[in-house]
Length: 64
Image 1 (spheres, rainbow, N blue to C red):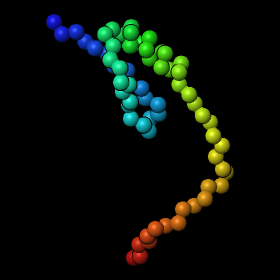
Image 2 (cartoon, rainbow, N blue to C red; image 1 turned 180 degrees about the horizontal axis):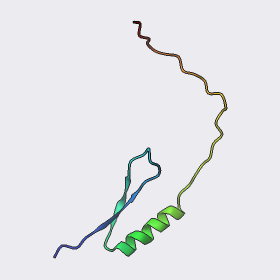
Image 3 (cartoon, rainbow, N blue to C red; image 1 turned 45 degrees about the vertical axis):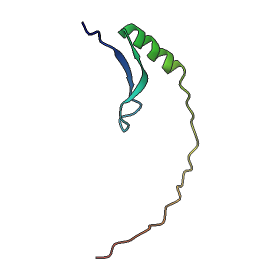
Image 4 (tube, rainbow, N blue to C red; image 1 turned 180 degrees about the vertical axis):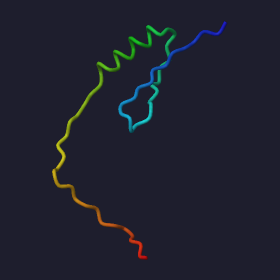
């Protein structure tokens, strides 16, 4: 009999794809506990963005 393995997939934002973490777990409970530990260990950084962004120069233009 083949036993199921469980992986952890996370989604940070709707614009980003699902990310699968490296480890595989024997039970759903082990995977759930590992996911909770992973979330507790996340680091976050909030940075200041300038109000006025510098516009980039165009590398090429098209004429009609």
